[in-house]
Length: 233
Ligand SMILES: *Cc1c(COP(=O)(O)O)cnc(C)c1O
Image (cartoon, rainbow, N blue to C red; front, side, top):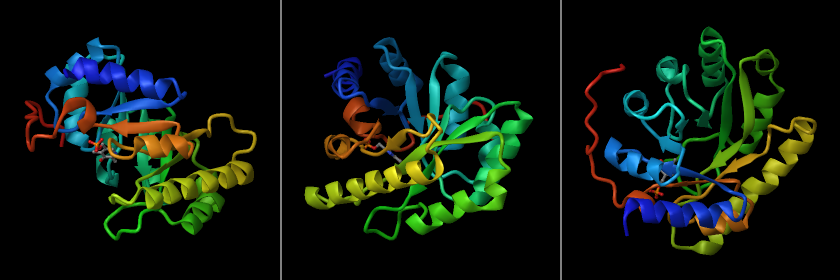
């Protein structure tokens, strides 16, 4: 199946559940992104700052770019002018930098707090207690140019579907608690970004509002497929 066919199939499947599809285009060339764009996709996810900046410069301006990978504070400035949503925020320090760069660009940047749900050492993210601590911090309440619109999580990379569902469920239950405690009157706090190619169905069953699907749409990632012409950093 072509990229356009895959895209249409996943888009209609997840949207029928009211879930947003983030087409993860990391490592894919601009031609492939354009094919998905022409098939109707507008939301794309990238995990590297420079790659996202370069692609955004070359591609249509109505694309919503989501940064889904780990973000270093010193690179926030490159994406601050245009990024639509930052999925992987995992420290107050990073939020403060996003706030600073958003202010410089006279905008408010939407962010998701990445929560650690996997049974693995390698994943980034905040523990449940750290999320609460961050939201209670005096410094957090002063940030006017960021908006927390929800939570994001990555389940353990395992074939054990029961375990994956339990992890997604933990994130959903935690989200509900955070919503009541901190965002009761805030309609913008509504997103749970969870689910990738291998586990998006389980994620949707457990309450995901946003799935990040890459290889099932674009095919296997080719290492270093994308070669930027311009250098952002
Ligand atoms: C690469 C990536 C995805 C997409 O993974 P696929 O298995 O290709 O669907 C989703 N989320 C994050 C954070 C990623 O880095």
